[in-house]
Image (cartoon, rainbow, N blue to C red):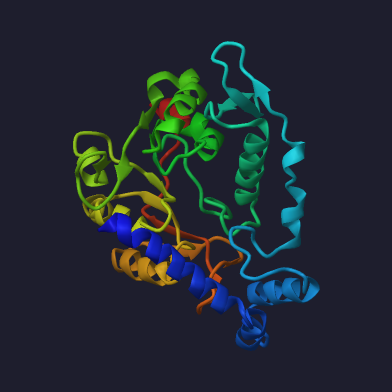
Length: 304
């Protein structure tokens, strides 16, 4: 039944999208044109400067600085040992699947860099919200591992969950220099345990619990949180970066859930302009934090 319904649902979604595009710019102007919010006014000003753009804009944020990230600037090389394409991130190699072309690697890396720009609505950390030295970190929907790679030196341990088997080889090659400190977990994370899927509460039942969790799973973020209820309720110090742009009301939903558990809620800067239904502007990442930062590992050793 699902195989029959899925194409029909996709067609219906395209019809809704095409219909919703008509007059979208005018509706946005009516809704936000007089907003006192500086972040919203910045988006409206961008749209006024770029009347040629078709709306909605999808995963490209509505800001001129995104033009700084050109794929052709990315240098792609092939490793002589394993034959995989890679890019250098600082002094480290970040590998990509065998089926990728150099142009696909360039595009993926440029998007990844743009997403983690401190001005980006997709930025996982920033402005007082960060990952501490000595943390146990979880990356759900790890994909290319670039974000984890930017943090790995400060972590006590990292668990990268990625169900797409195309990424398993390159992820293990990327993080080989850190040995057993980094675990690539070939599973999806969800609300129930099952074939190819695990709850975070189950996975960490006999392991040190995480201090940081990043969740980017194409709209099923709610399932991840449902399967981590025990961790969320009983955590001492925990920070979360959760994507909220996939579904239009996820930010409000997760804000209520985590706020009710005692987490401080903030958000990444700016907005995405993704959908054709209100709210037209969506926050990209919800930051949730509870507890105080750990004493850094080096400081603990010095004080011992």
